[in-house]
Length: 287
Image (cartoon, rainbow, N blue to C red; front, side, top):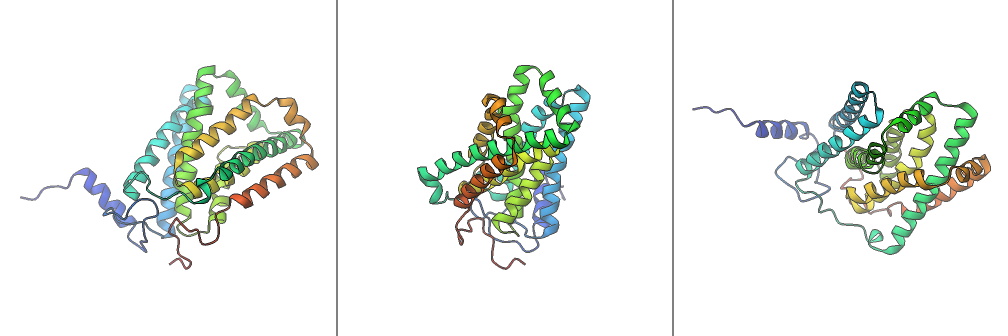
């Protein structure tokens, strides 16, 4: 008697077929019977697109229906985080057994990561203030008005929990690892950071998000886990609340923010994974 396969088996078969071409070793967790991981650009772009569409669709739909973009972010963040966690569990066969780099096991690495976070914040924020003064941004003004109109509890949840968890799951938990199947770490970090910045929807916030995205991609590359980059992202958002606005405005000159961003670039050079530390399983000649 023929029996239709369970839904879970059917989904697993679909994933295996999608990942069939040019499958390589599993980067995080032991090799499993779940089918390996595809290095085909078609599969990589398709999986990135699914995550991005899910995030944007949920955020916009909830925001439009409720009249609160902040609520949209508060709902889409946890939803995308859960979806990416399931995807990582399914794809890698483990939550993460990827080894932490030797560099990330030392205190020096985390001191540089925190210094880099501060420099990225001050440089990005001061550049953003300068851009807003020079060219303006109605989209940024609209986003700020929505935040000011949101209930305090909802805004705090969105800033410190939902946005860091959802955005890091999407960008460092999904897009960056997928791009790493074909790209070097620096290129993948830059591309995923540009996507991360563009998701914020206006040039002012792009200036803030771009250096942060590169920093978090490098940290993720060393640790292979989401919670450290989620925590750093939450600290970055906390700084946006507690750092006095006059301090950032005083730094909003080309000479100052350029010097700070150069300092951030120097820290990023220190945090860049060493040549040959290819723990993501990328080979030198992708097929």
